[in-house]
Length: 364
Image (cartoon, one colour):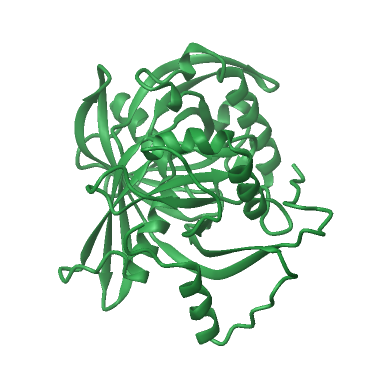
């Protein structure tokens, strides 16, 4: 990948910063990562993969990765305990689809490879500027373009005196797929909206199942989120209208409506339960895009209006309709979501060939 940082550069940087590097046994697999968090949600960046990724586009490489044992072994190594945890998230960098983007990425979690990730895209944009892969623009706003499995996304990194002060994530066109879809849960029958924001999400008012989006309801929110996802995943509502590689209900967004701020901004709190019971600590970037699509379709949010979207840990994204458009015969919006990402560490992980736990485990 043109202009990318290599593993040796990462290791040299660690040594230069005075870190202690502990070398593993002979023939151990070592892999370097740079870690960020966006509004509390982790993102582990792998620049140089020790295994090949086949395919001419990012979307094709995702299909390859989903079925390749070596790539999945690497994903499990970095995601599972003891090197990660059940809610870990990260990405493998790839070449872009063409010269129109700076690079591509495959997003991963404990259950596989996702089609979209807003918080990860923000983290990658911050990393690209921090490393100089994308030179900071003198204007103070630097554009980073990334190819992801669901398409091409644009990040606008705003800075002041070397500090990043905000990142705007401009996503692929997003739209409501279905409204008032009936679902039976262990807490009763409910209705949900389904919307696409790079991935398909079901949207459920938490009060409909007697819950609120708060840490004390964490386990119950996960349980309901999983029920809704798996009830819908095999239905026609889970089919992408143009690309079956994007099909499947990726997650359930349970939300609290917090009313309207004095400036007219809508305010909501959500928890996104995605994959198989994984919880986004941030307000969820692609999930916020799908939320914008629902609110726009329902007439709640129009051009120029803002959604203040809170997470279960109290972090925030702000989001707006950047443009109105059409996609696959549907009314759609181009959402812009604003947040910020911070680097949390640089790591060299090792897999000892004599380690009985191998690539690790997940306790969920």
